Amino acid sequence: MDADLLDQFVETTGSTMAEAMKYLKLCDNDINAAVGCYFDPTVGRSSGMLGEQEAAVRAPIAAFTDRINEQVAVGRMGKRPSIVFEDGDLGAMFKAPTDISFVGTLETAKIKGRNRKKWLLVNVQDKDVFQSQLLNRDLWCLEDVRDVIERHFVFWQIFRDNLEGEHFVKFYKFTEFPCICIIDPNTGELLKQWGHISHMEFMKEMHDFTSRYRFESGTRRKSFDFYGMSRADMFKIEKPPVLEPPPALYPSSSSSSSSSSPSPPSSPEPDSDPDTTLEPAPAMPEVPADVQPGTVHVTFRLPDGARHTGVFQQDGGCSELYRWLTIYAQMEDFNVWTAFPRVLVSDDEDVSVLSVVGGGNRAMLIVSEKE
Image (cartoon, rainbow, N blue to C red; front, side, top):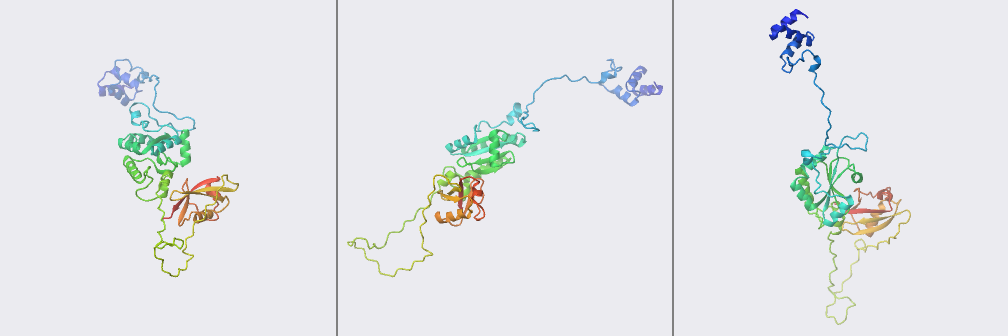
């Protein structure tokens, strides 16, 4: 071993020559590494480890078995682990609102909403999206949110990857999650829809919705919007009173001669103007109980809640729908819409009735007045 390295190590550390030889041998005659090892408190000088290089290697950690609170979704190739908190503090923080959530299918939830005269509030969750868990922590657990839900809604929380959730997402064509929406339990119509929403925004939206919609009265307080009303609300719209003709000022010629009322003064009758004379609406055509081949039965829901059904040729133009409403329903300045989804029906003759009704032999269309 180089004597200069030994002298340099002893001079630097103040150690003995034997210690210098051990540390330089351990560090392959690297003077800097040897000095560092000498002053390192983790290296025991009297334990006998200095002569064995393997003694500086940490012993391996013993194998053990434990459990993490993370469920791995199965059944889909390549799907990421689902974020589901179950136990402990995190489980309590992100706990699903099972105490206020309805358990059942969409149809049973709508039945409960109709019986209790409440709207259906739906939260579609995605286990792969952390914002879904944030809704449980930041929204559904708050007292004011729960109070609004208890008074006005039937709350239904589902996951998009179960059978009922997949059907719901496919029917309403949702693509972004989490999703919050309001459904009319009478018609199944989608009235409102939001994504991830803050507490203040949610309360503002709920106040606006409950101010505009009243389930029992079927009226909107701000403005009349036909498409913002449910089917039950449409039937409750107060129809305008029918004006009866005023009583005749003079008796008709068929009245008894004993009447003491004076006779009307003789005056020439004005010529009737055919353009201003109101003709009674023709009687509605009879609709057969069975749908004949090549035809479709279309039921129109008018703005006053009334319903009328007409028979149309499947290959006929949509202009026939407008013409039928003009003649038999005495409608003027109106639009025709499909129910789900809400799409304006064209009055073009080149657009067939079959393309509007979706290939079925019975359909429901909505009629609204133009603003």
